Structure formats: structure tokens, C-alpha cells
Amino acid sequence: MKNAFVILILGFVGFSCETKKEETAKPEPITIGDITRSEICRASLDGLSKGDIDSFVGPMADNAVYVFNNGDSLVGKEAITNYWRDRRENVIDKLTFSSDVWLVVNVNEAPSSRVMTGPWVMGWFLAKATYKTGKSMQQWIHTDYHLNDEGKIDRVIQYLDRQSINQAQQTE
Image (cartoon, rainbow, N blue to C red; front, side):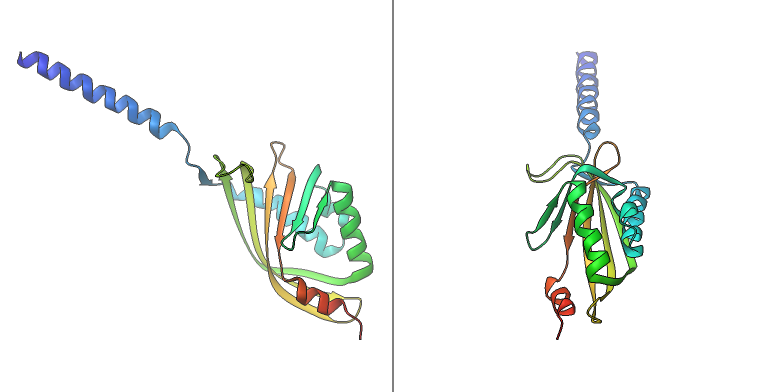
């Protein structure tokens, strides 16, 4: 009887260990990602700063979407290219980004259908822009980048203060 009880206990412990292995094998909903993915986004931002729009959009997917926090959005690489080429050639004279901080997270399980799974690169940086009007502005900008399975940027969400930009663009 004592041996049967020991066998029963060992069987239960073995079963519970198996169950725990399966539970821990499931990935966390969000994990810290590979920081080297931020280099793709940093290089893109560097291209925008230099006015090299081809370098800026180079790492973007053809179906990329660029969303501003005020609800405006650009759909497709061509629309993003045209918008930023016009801004850099006709509106913004000089643009720099500094004091950047980057964080990469992997969304393994989306909390809703509005959140894309996969790697997200989050960047915070100080933007300084001088406009063709001669005025300038400075502000902290937060930008989220999603990378598709090919490592291309397919979603950009940018959070910025549109009022300071509008004021700097106005001519007296």
C-alpha cells in the first residue's frame, strides 16, 4: 500500500511538472526585442534629417502607412515619399534629431485587433526644425515603427505638437 501511494504521488508530481512546462512554453504577450532593429528606423530618420528622402523611405514597405497623432495619415510608400519630399524641398530648411532613445518590443499576442503583432520600435528624440519662413521650432517627438516579416517598416505612428509646427510655418 505504501509503495502504491508513493507511485501515485510521483505520478502526480510528474504530471504537474509536464503541465508547467507547457504553460511556460507559451510566450509572454509582449517581450523586449532585439535592439539592432532600431538601426533600421534610426537610419531612416537620418535620411529625413539630411533631406535624402530615398534613404528615408528605403526601409519602408510599399504598403506602409504613416499616421500622425492628429488623425492625418499617408497610405503607401509613394504617398509618404511625395509628402516628405515636398516638406523637405519647400517647407523645411533644416531638420535635426538628437538625444534619441530607442526601445524594441515584440508584440506576441495583440491585446486587440487594432494592434499589430511582431516587432515594434519606439523612438523618442528632440526634433529641431528651421522652416523656409526663417522661424524654427523645437520639440520632443515620439515615433512608433512596426516592422513586417521582411524587416521593412510598414507602419509609422508619430506623436508631435502640430501647433508649434504651424506657428513656425506662418509668415508674418
